Image (cartoon, rainbow, N blue to C red; front, side, top):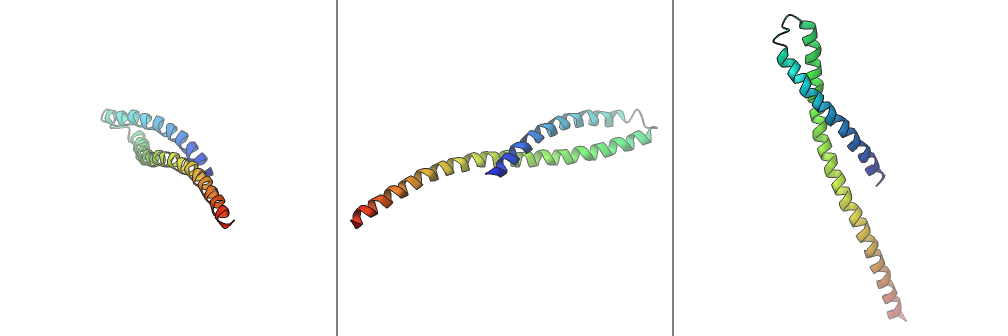
Length: 103
């Protein structure tokens, strides 16, 4: 259950990644502009590395999707825990009934 707290933090971090994804969009535009700066190879090298970093971020975004699913599943688990509480009460009630039969 505590791990869910960690996941919530990861969800916030995903928000940061979404912002980074938008910045990647800017970089893609820079790549197109690269045609203009053909002579500036050093700068292009830097951008190429940035593009790779963007791909990593895209993968992270997919992982965030998994986390969102986990969060939803956590919601289900919480419901199960509450239902379990109900069952426990039922079991205790049955326990009372069994005791009554013994007497």
